[in-house]
Image (cartoon, rainbow, N blue to C red):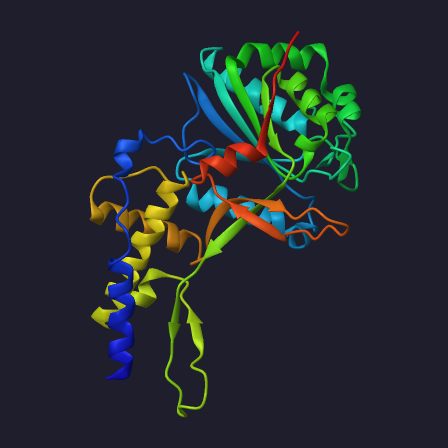
Amino acid sequence: MRERATFESEISHLLSRPSYENPQSQGNQVKGGGATPGSGQGIDLIFIMKPLPGEEEEDQFTKDLTKYVKTVLRGQQNKEIYNVDDIIDHLTWIIWKSQGREKVRRIRIVAHGQKDMGGVKMALRTTKPTGGQSAKLESEMKFVLPSDVLKQFMNEPNRQVVRAVMTKDAVVEFWGCYIAGVPEAGSAWSSIFESTFRATSEEVMTGYHYYTLHRRTASLSQTPPSDRVHNTSEIDKLNKRVQEHFRIWLLERYREFVRNGDVLPVRGESNQINLMRDIFDSSDGDLKYLVVNIYLRGRRFQPGVGRKVRPGNPNFWSRVWKDFTFSI
């Protein structure tokens, strides 16, 4: 009886929360939201600067952002790369495939940024790709400083590609930490793509949601263990009360994700539930979302400690991003 009362009070609490504005009335625009389309004509691309083989397990940041991009951001074009040369190669392929008709309005780059120095971590090429063979890479990734970014990638062939494919108002957004705090970095990356470059001087990271079931134990003195749910099929086998609680939980996540631009709104509650079930299953029950951490200033820098800000908080979100404008 006590268990039923507790469960029903949880459902009542969820249903009694303030209603949200109809997402359709927001014009699908959440500035900074990962699924929010870019401005103007053209396509949006996400490039993920992946670690070298054998280093994947050590790079939790890239693993988390990659999972967010591939499971939550529905339909976003994304490609895993090692360096800026790989980006230029892909842009060249777009020009060739579309015979110059397709343009790029926004690029997002997932990569590690270096505090104080403005370097971006990547694996540079030691040879060019030839005869269908991939380029050879340096044996380890390193932070490439702003001055070296210009030396390595600012050349006439690259500029021709950029000018042919990027729209006049294109934006390149850096989903990594710190580098907006180094003006030389913002200027260098803006020059490489001859576009507005957007970055933050704070920490970029992911948060996560997961759903747990609380199991009974033999003794009332023991704390009931929690079982994390990895697939909606686990819920479908349980009783109707648990299924209803899970359904409400999914709707809560849907509203939160729409409010922060992680997913675009869809009409109808059944479609909303189906969307979130699909995201839940594709992410193994680990729903990622984008966060900027405004870290605490002081004598000692502590990564991850600070105020976590989401795109749905426009006053803080817009405050932590800085645009660097390209000029000839």
